[in-house]
Image 1 (cartoon, rainbow, N blue to C red):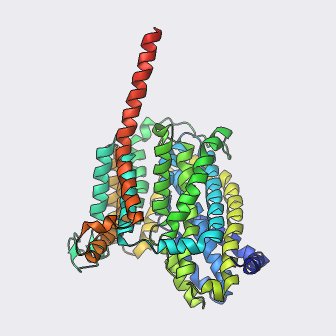
Image 2: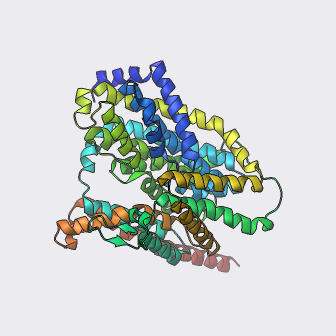
Image 3: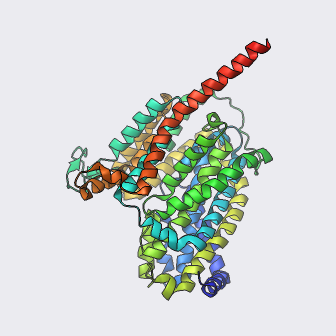
Amino acid sequence: MDGSSFMEGLFISLEPMNILWIIIGGFLGTIVGMLPGLGPATAVAVLIPVTFGMEPVSAIILMAAIYYGAMYGGSRSSILINTPGDGSAIAATFDGYPMAKKGQAGEALAISAVASFIGGLIAVVGFIFLAEPLANFALEFGPAEYFLLMLLTLSAIVALSIGKMVKGFLAMMLGLTLSTVGIDTQTGVYRFTMDIPHLSEGIDFLIVIIGVYAIGEVLYNLLTIDQEKKEKKKVGKVWFTKEQWKRSKWPILRSGPIGFLIGVLPGAGGSIASMISYTTEKQISKKPEEFGEGAPEGLAAPESANNAASVGAMIPLLTMGIPGSGTTAVMLGALIMLGLRPGPLLFEQQPETAWALVNSMFIGNIALIIINILLVGLLVKILDTPAKVLYPIIVLLAFIGTYTLSYSTIDFFLLLIFGFFGLFLKVMDFPLAPLVLALIVGGEMEQNFRKALLSSDGSLDIFFSSGVSIVLFALTVASLLYPLIFKFFKRRNQAKKTDRISKSS
């Protein structure tokens, strides 16, 4: 790292106009991230015209602020109304929404903001010192390694459906099946499109997320509304307790590096980062049974990871010109239009621009935690909204978010289908995470599997041909064996406890 270029970039990022862009971008990103279906990629794409005529440095700072601001904001709707803003915010519904239902919405929002802040700072520090070696490491991932990484993610999330493993497996298989709808990119064959031209491009996973979580949740609440007490919900404090912080701090510090490293891998993204961090924490937790019931560490871990992943995704973009996520793909096109050419020569030819961006991310995370903490008191008031007002608003936002994906009314029918399907899954007590995650990674997983076999003439040896692939395969097996090991030790501890009681009596 060139010290003089780093300092020059720091001074550029501290210019008053650039600080203003950081604040504006972070605030807009937070708001857009809360809206179902409108993720960071949409926010950046919509605001590209604003950057025309701007200095290239200011433009990239604004776009980056929108990006990680949306990563902050995506979990707000997950926590408050069980509706993820985008794919990377799914994990925040697992424990964030149960916390809100228990009257801890303020604490959940505060934990989410602080976890995102610390995860982002960890990733920025990692970026400063590890950008070049990590970019080279990411190049070691071929189709076989990417397939095994996604297989590990799916196996971990299914394995942690303790008590519901069969249902989790069925949900995962359904998600993988849905991911095959559309034109096969390798053969050009139409699959499961039912002669509907709109389905040739596949089913957008955001439609499934919005349908299953938002519409499904509204329908479920309408069925059970008479069973609930008509008392006013408490929203809790606007800050977390010492006990909650004690349970969250180590998961935050562990998940930041995990999210950062996964974010560096092109195509992995915040969804996989947040899921892996969540499953990791549940596996090592002394109280895994509390996950899904409002465990603060179950919210803190994925929030730290997904924000760190957004910073990590900048490494392949800036050092190799390879977008690490959908949002960075949009940013790549915008940067080229602005006359910047991301790639190996960027840090040599325009180092002040690259380091100004890195330093702006550090400043942006500080600005965003202030913005998000100030918004906590306002956001928790959403829970005070009467059901007859709140539910129509959620449905309206769901339809607006769905329409903006491809501007097709056919998506409305898909939204309703998946809404009723989400209600069925909830009533039958199926875990939703394996379904959604399988749909998100299914397409890439299939293509990488087939590319790997093509490159090895059909030999499965390619999945054990590198150290990385062997480690990933071993972790996959370990994640599948974990429930059996956990059950064995739990039974043994219960037997010992019973023996002690019988001896003492």
